[in-house]
Amino acid sequence: MPRQPRQLQSGYSYHVTTRCNNREFRLTRLECREVFLFAIKKAQQKYGFKLYALCIMSNHVHYLLEPTKPEDLPKIMHWLNWYTAMCFNRMLNRTGHFWEKRYHSTGFANTDKRRALNTLRYIHANPKAAGIQPGFFYDFSNYGIHDRLGNDGITQWHPAFLSLGKTLDECAAKYRGFCKKYRPLPKSEKKNLMGSRLLGGMKIKAKSKKSSPGQMCFPWGEWEATDPEIAAVAETFVQANSYYPTSVPGIGKPEPS
Image (tube, rainbow, N blue to C red; front, top):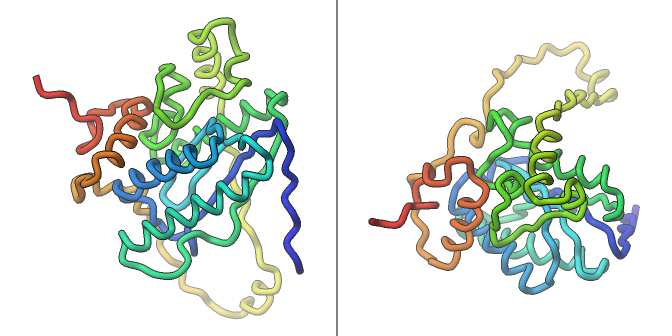
């Protein structure tokens, strides 16, 4: 069955999700996340799109972006997925597909402020919903620039965020309160009816539930950036968005006195 063409329109923002192949936790390492941020920066220089929200999780990534031209969205995602897959496979000494199937995207008009704010909050709430962070601050999402009104060098504020108040401080305060009201919905378990019938008479040994590598710890101390340009992009982003930016070794180091 042929793929359905994507509905792309001018003046739309797109919530895009990409996931690692087999849902493996391939994005836990600091060097991969630094390269990812650098790749996004390069893609922006190449295609000139606006990135309103970003969250890099352990096995998937959320974006909220607006391409300069609607038809640029597939080009942006193709280039980003190709570039990062090439880098990560080499860095992780692996071969084959890095990303799982097509990226998922849903679009909405920039004038739909309610939808935009709900999408922003959903993306920023991912680490909290996954149990990685107690709050919304997270080194590799851009919630921080919405709360502290900084500049991370990659993302910017959506028009819906800027419409929350007459001043930036008022916008930040209202968005902060909006995020505090967030309650993640429980995910329903998918059932395979055919498989259930076939396996109905079999006893299956239950597996103990394990935390993902991304929810246990990040190996921050195992690698140091060798490319100053990559490190600079990552440092700017983390400094602007992390609750305690100087607590991450290799990123946000204070200047020597």
